[in-house]
Image (tube, rainbow, N blue to C red; front, side, top):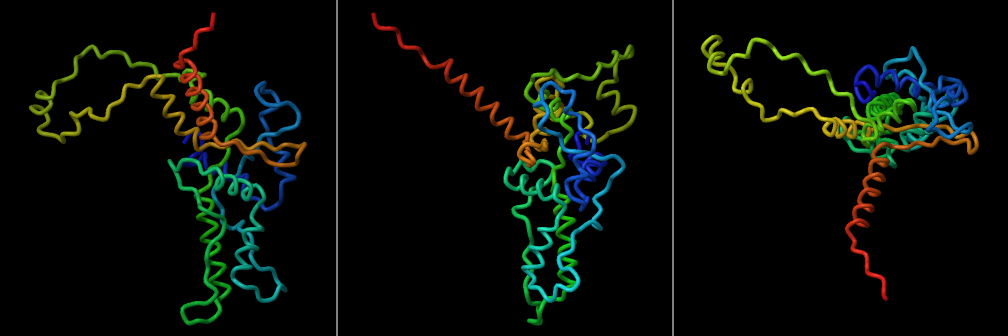
Length: 267
């Protein structure tokens, strides 16, 4: 929830992708990359996250057919609908489909679009109202599958936590109770027989920095970073699971190099 994969924070992050007004006003929002030493200087801007926008409002869904355009086939309406998606949302959706991050919190759609038959069950042309309803339902589904990018500062901190560069801050240990806790037999005598799950610790974890790094890695694998490059006028999207895979490949390469015996020099 803190990193916007579920809950209210996710709806707030998705608010920046529901505007149909193009990319120009998106670049004027707050960016935290200017004062960060890890980011490339000058030519790139982190994806904007506007304040005051929440909820996945399907009222901003693009319209598939404009007035006066005549009768269109259902396939053409679907193509126009996808083409008229908000630019940022379209960029994010195409990148997520291509990158295919791990489906831990939500599944990634296989493609952009929906199959709607040209004819209904009576073999008549599909009514436009029904096509519009199906497109709106698909648009709501698309929003529910998107993984919104994090601000650059949060994304880099989560990356360092997942890779073990930063040590996670463990919760402060509670003070030991002066009164020893009652035994299982005493609890049964005082409160009667309870559920067995109360006395089982099969799934208990000892919270250690290594355990927390694995948890952060799972969250980071679904988190993208969206950066606008003013030189190429394109959005560069980096996904966390690819960073983790690259880091793992580097570690495996170092391990293989260390385990390979060096041949003796000829005399």
